[in-house]
Image 1: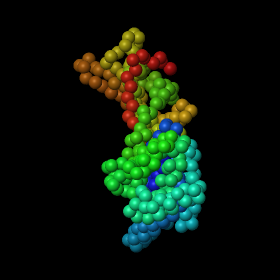
Image 2: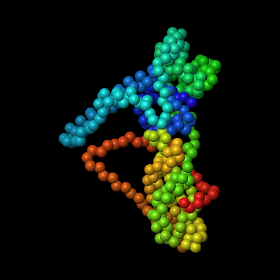
Image 3: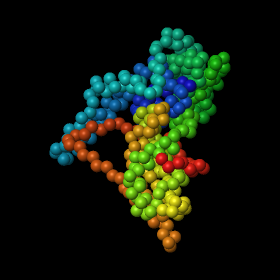
Image 4: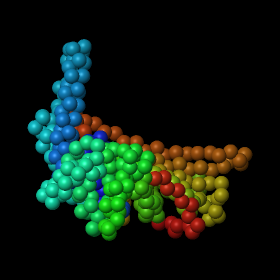
Length: 346
C-alpha cells in the first residue's frame, strides 16, 4: 500500500507532526504501508510549510511585543531563524521508523503530464495544472507494484469535480489495465478511518509489569485488611499513538479479585492498579512505567462499598528557562477485557 498526500495535506498537518499524523504513522507500520512524495509535491511542501512557519513566528513575536508594551519587562522569546525554518522544512520527509519515499523528478512523467495538459484530459480538463498531471502520472506508475491511496482536495481528480462522486471516471478507466487500483480521499480523516485496524497489545504483560513494579505498596495495602491478591478480573485501557510510530502509550487500570486470610475468594473485595506505560509495539516490550495509584474496594457489614487509596505523585523542578519537547498522544482505541481464565499471581 502506497499513500500519496497532496501538498495542502502536508502543510495542514505541519509536515505530518500533528496528533492525527501520529495516528497515520502508526497505521503505516500496522498496515505495512509507506508514503510516496512526488517531486512536485516535495518542492511545494518545502516552500509553503516554510512560509507558514515564518508567518507564525512573526505572529508570535508581534504578540510578545504587544505584551511587552504592557508589562515593561518579559523573558525573551527564543524562536528559530528564517534560515533554520527553511532548513527544517527541507528535512521534513526524513523520518525514523516509517518509510517515506521521495520520488525523483521523472522526465517520462513530465512528458506524459504535458501531453495530458495539451489534450485537456483530467485532471487538466478545466484548468492547466501541470503539478496535478504529474501527480496522476506518478499514481499510474506506482500501480504496477501496489494499491495507491491519494489524499487531495483538488476537485480536478473527482468525477464532475464533485468530492462525493469519487475518482473521475476518465481517470478510473486509465487504471483498468493496471495490477492495482487508486482509492481517493477528500479528507485526511477519511484515510485514517480506512486504515483502522484493531491494535493488538500484550495486556497480560502490561498488567504483570505494573504489579511487579508496585508489589511492595500493593502488599502493604492488602495486609492492612487481611487480604491477598487473586486472579485478574478486568483490564481497561486507552491506547494512544505517539510521536514515535513504533511506540504506543497505554493508560490502564487492572482490577484483581481478592482472597481472605482463610484463602477464600471475596466477591465483595477487589484491588485496582492504575498506571501508564509506553509499549514498544514492534518488540513487545513494556517501557517507562508511570504508576497512577492503587485502590482497594470492599463492602462492610452494612453492604456499603468502602475504598482506600494509594495516590502516587511526582515533583519536578527546573531552574531558569526549560527546554520544551514535542510530544503527541492521539487516541487509537479503547480496549477492555474480562479474562475467562484467571491469570496466575506473578
